[in-house]
Length: 125
Image (cartoon, rainbow, N blue to C red; front, side, top):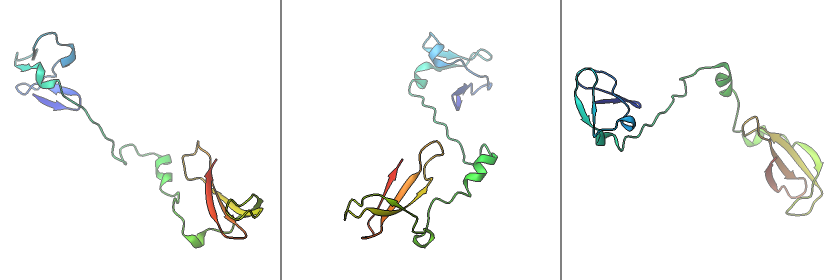
């Protein structure tokens, strides 16, 4: 017998064998050459499939590679100033900027930096 994906083939003639879960007898018999295989050999059969990154090329997938997900420290500007209380020193003003780090249907990540003590934190909204 030969297993390809979830399909089982006869080793003698290459015919596609019946699904073991639908066979009522202890053996699976090839309908073409009458070769038999014990049904028990298939009881622990697990099928695992994977897809290569380039298996389904598309314009959307090719655009994904141009999105920058890591930034160097000097690439970020101070950001706009907002009236937000610093959790560390209590200062009432913070710089903030947003980045879309997660998928497009989720909110952006907001980065805050205290204008007084420089404390930094982020939130996902």
